[in-house]
Length: 167
Length: 425
Image 1 (cartoon, each protein chain N blue to C red):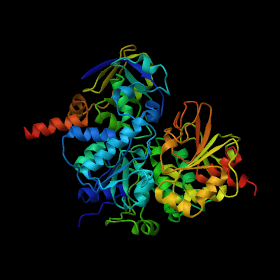
Image 2 (cartoon, each protein chain N blue to C red):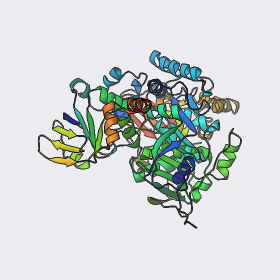
Image 3 (tube, rainbow over the protein chains, first blue to last red):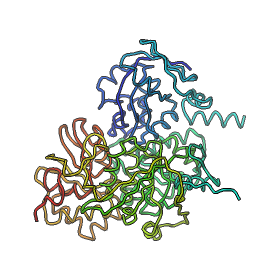
Image 4 (cartoon, each protein chain N blue to C red):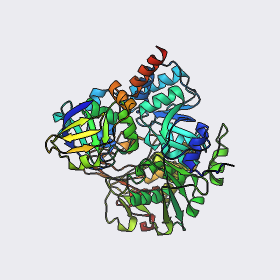
């Protein structure tokens, strides 16, 4: 599974209120959430984000509230992957559960700048910065997690698995 | 005879639930849960995912709690639709612990009060502050809606056994220093990711005398240090709190004396002043003496962190016979209907209203910038809530300062951030 996209770069402790402010949690609509993604933190995000773009951030990305609306808003905005130095625990689970690939890689996160293009091989856990030529290694996902991401998340993955077991 | 391997509270509780003699840190286990929780903003996604799973019943209709509290009583039409979806799900699947507006409370004040979370339990909730129940000795942790959908359907969820940080508090607390000051000080010390992926055990002589309401405040904010759980060993205070409320048996569990910890932190509480966390991270903690002159527009006293009985008593003690500063809106929100009623009976409600404060029905409302106290650009609020992120309580250019109820109430009178000792008689 290979991705290539342009980078949005953020710092440490980007909390889920920054990703999707709580005032928009009166809906579960993916499109409505995407329309307000990152707006308190970066007013240029919604207008300029392109399908396939990648978010790169510092430590503890996704800290704070357990709202699954946060990875949903990023994914529905077109974000294909988040690379960070570290992730907050609940966000980590939520992102994978909804099929948004995320990679922990401090070296790549620190060296990548806004506007760079990254090429990411999820099965190998390899990140290549197209602009600088640098390559970074993150821990590759096990087979089941790749299948889960490919299925679009935990629920669809579980459904397929149940169907196979009974088929 | 095989040598017994010591375990922390987290290891022991998870081992007991998975039928294992011993669990090692880092192991992945599928854990049966005692209680599953969701609220009006996280339940809708969980309900949609539950429907996609294709199951036709919940694992146990007595082991799920659904609480409309975040944007309830309904703040707008969309919120009303979300509450309606949760209510209809509760009716369809016969959820016993659905709490309607007028009979509810803020979930993390309500569930312990109702005896639904007990020592030794494993509790998962679609709300990050689910870790609050560590105060009664439960292993309780927040998750997202999809995980909660799976837990509602199957009654179990996979987890990684966390390592544990032991924080030992000793010494005598100063006047007006409570659980909120201890936890803000602690987060200031270890940082907002200081306990990421780990459990915390709060212990030591200064904890042994700490009331349950103060313990609930501390466990509540474990997540603000990134922790998966923040627990207190069950003791006489736990027993006294739980025994009259529990409607089922439980398994109180303490760590082994020789358990292995990732890290042990010693804190002398006699050195801790009333503490205020500055914008925009809970870890920006400062002793009150170093706060300086910070003028405020609003004071919020309430939330799942500090909306309990003792919090209201402390605020009322300070506000009694005084007036909220003319430039300040003071909003007091009890955690549950039971606390609300006690506040009416005990004269606290009258104290708040006579002081010129709002006294509201339970809701999370202002804490997350929902309603009932949203801030305009440039406004500052002293708040007993748990987060002071950018835009948390309203406009992106507003500011939230976190503190305990004594500081919030005193500040409401002073018009700037200060303590009860700065109030004349």
